[in-house]
Amino acid sequence: MPAFLDALRNAVPAARLVTDPDVVASYAHDEAEWAPRGTPAALVRAGSTEDVRAVVAACAEHGVPVVPRGAGTGLSGGANALDGCVVLSLEAMNEIVEIDAAERLAVVQPGVVNDVLRLAAAERGLWYPPDPASSPWSTIGGNTATNAGGVCCVKYGVTRDYVLAVEAVVGRGEVVRLGRRTAKGVAGYDLCGLMVGSEGTLGVITEVTVRLRGARAPEHTVVGYFDALRDAGEAVSRVTAAGIVPSALELVDRHCLEAVDAWRNMGLSADANVLLLGRTDLPGEAGEAEADAMVALFKEAGATWSARSSDEAEAEALFAARRLAYPALERLGPVLTEDVCVPRALVPEMLTRIEAAASDTGTHIANIAHAGDGNLHPLIIAPAGDDDARVRAQRAFDRIVADAIDLGGTVTGEHGVGLLKRRGLHAELDPAVIAMHHAVKDALDPAGIFNPGKVFGTP
Image (cartoon, rainbow, N blue to C red):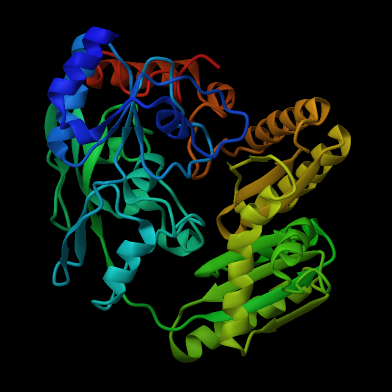
């Protein structure tokens, strides 16, 4: 390791290399509760593609793992350090290189924060749709590595739908450009698409070209109050069956509402056990008609109250409460976050199974969901220092994963596999498919240094 650190000192500017144990330790994990972490040998805060190339080349030569890291907002342990690794932080590579309004695209470095890109696009009358709840902090590089989603994805898709091209450092330090800037292109395999969602296991993304859309019409917001989770799930199924594709359809349960109220005193939990928030961005009368249709479907499914919001500030506050749910619950104790996705027609059944898992394991589980696309986020809470509660929480976590697979769903809709979902991934995918993934990994990472053990590692 001393020889390697000497090589690293020769490879990158002195200001980029950090070996102070306290600073390095602060970069050793993301936000995934109870995911294992190791002790890095060093931290490099890369400032350029050349810095990344030099680090990868040195690590490949010495057989040292590289763990890429963005803002550290991940929830699956994908950015957690391994013993003796180099944590490669990309946060300082935060330049918006270009916004081309005519071609409706942006070129950004991986450390650009999601909301910063969205604001810059909006100033030019454009819109970048992927909007994870962490958008004020998470970076485009991290969003790309995990194929992040968000509130708008029910209608507008996830990060992969917007990534046109990437620059990446792969192999033993080769810099490659994958994808294209054109609207169409089928030359060769979709290696750019392969990098999206690869969680740093195939290389380090150093630049991203993303597609932009034109600005949207103002949205109409529909609010529904429900007594039971299953009733809210039934409303989601009815919206889907009616052929409505809302611009958002979000679920927040009483546990989340109470936590937000206790933190921010918003007064939300007084009126409902479950809150369902729908939006439509169709223009003019079509939008009004779609909003009215959602109101009717909510009532048919058992809503105790449902209406179109006529107060834009109130509507924004409700969606703000949905984004605040996770940090509000963290104030109650460690939160183990689920990320399962099931067919939309089976959302009521999955919500019922989540409630059963909570009851049977004696575990406090709160629920938020991108309900419109079947992506559910049960938030499993255990008091700090309570080992028995932690064991029960992990049992509930595994049971929810198994139930999602049983219903034809997937173990992760947008957070990634990282470390927490490896067992679930092996349960979801056939052995032959697992072998295909290993073959791709071996071909693109011949030195075996890129985030080893993550995603397809042994559970």
